[in-house]
Length: 192
Length: 192
Image (tube, rainbow over all chains, first blue to last red; front, top):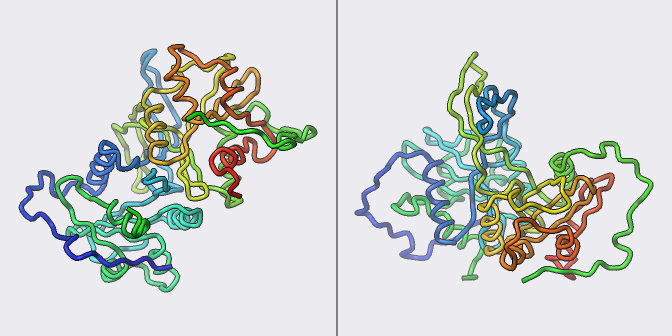
């Protein structure tokens, strides 16, 4: 199933005169700010998962303090962000690229498998990609990511695929990357 | 709202002759084994989150290897386990105690707040407690945990509260802590 929607006219109108204090912040900080906003405004409970590591050695310089002295990064088995929105399970991965295409090596095969499992279990799964040179952000539903992989042997997804099968998120003042209205329009059609 | 259910007669019958290979494993390993089983059997997608840490110093002894040389444990803002089951968001914390009561200092106040937010957003939230001396396991819905905290000023929850307002999980061979049937009976009543 390929997800699509028509933008209601007028909805994408942007406030042009806002000053961005932190233009060029990382995608991760923009999403963390957005998720904190959603939490505070009681719109959703969505967090970034901690970085998975294997701890080898811990020192205790004092009775109350523990210092990790040797640890290694692990390959993540899941995506970075998950939580609950309107009762539904939300799960996504966020990636940045400096290129004007999205190289598929940026996303681990088991993260793609994980997103496939999420949607098979009735959850909402997607990726958010920042094309940093263009300063454009897209939400691509997992359904459409999987459709691309099924129909193509290319090692990257062209920008045009995001333009046609994804949903652009305009960077704004607060929250910086307001992706929930897109989720409403794709997954909660007519149910406001 | 206090969650309750009647066990259908016969449902709690246990297979008594099974040999437990790893009796006394930690609650965490029992839950990880259970969640891996659910994943493999395509029943649910539920993971333990990585331990949250703050990384201060990373060495790169070779081009391909990164070694974390200084990092600190952070207080978790959320619970340890979350995922998707039958389209719904699942979120829980797992705790062990050697006592025959559950000391409330075992669970962080912001974890309790987090569970409250989860249920307010339509997710399913609970705690799983292992009373290790008794080798008894209980699932206590977040609704009932919050009801206890609202009605009591005690610093611990007595076992009898778990017996009356929780749901006992019997340790078994595979999966070791089969908690999803309880979720079915509490949250998906009559909807099989």
